[in-house]
Length: 213
Ligand SMILES: Nc1nc2c(ncn2[C@@H]2O[C@H](COP(=O)(O)OP(=O)(O)O)[C@@H](O)[C@H]2O)c(=O)[nH]1
Ligand SMILES: [Mg+2]
Image (cartoon, rainbow, N blue to C red; front, top):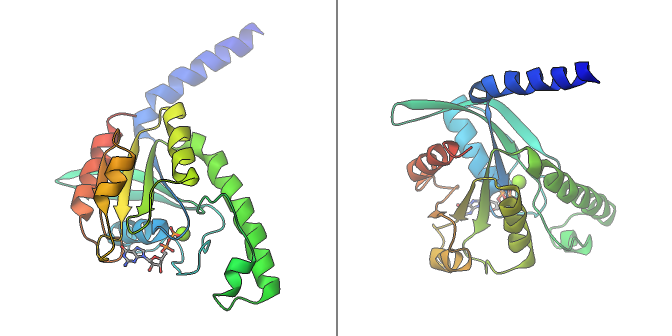
């Protein structure tokens, strides 16, 4: 018993000592098709030359968590090392029939729906392990929905630093103000993951949030 207490005590001191040396776990969360993988890919490509995963117009393309370790992001002469974590989109309803309109065969659609459901569970499970979370939202869509509110509520409860990204500002329908109005207590940054608009501001915000962890 005493040994165990001592062991835990040293373990804690040890891990605190190296806390700042550990890679910062940066998670990309949000509803399906918002552009999480596109954004994670762009960052990974810029700093490592490699991508993290596949981007698709079909929702739930990412159905399991994918990582890229040791991503050294440099911004204004400073460098920080991140572990990038791209997650499956969180949805309240996954219907296999929704995949059929993308010319996915019925059997494959059923498999996809099952995997996507599992992916949602996996995403939520991983929330606890994040140091910083980037919530990627499609700024052409209405931000007031159950999924966004649930994700943000979860993060607040866990006291994890959050950046809300309003993606797809290159599109005409994009409305950053609507997202800002929906979540006024958070910093919202408009970007285009597809064209790389506002990426410098994105890095600035991430570096700022890193100080809070
Ligand atoms: N116009 C536009 N399309 C985007 C942008 N980012 C992602 N997309 C598109 O949105 C779809 C979903 O992207 P993806 O990265 O797979 O989203 P995820 O499901 O959140 O990982 C794809 O067709 C992307 O090409 C953007 O900034 N602008
Ligand atoms: Mg994805």
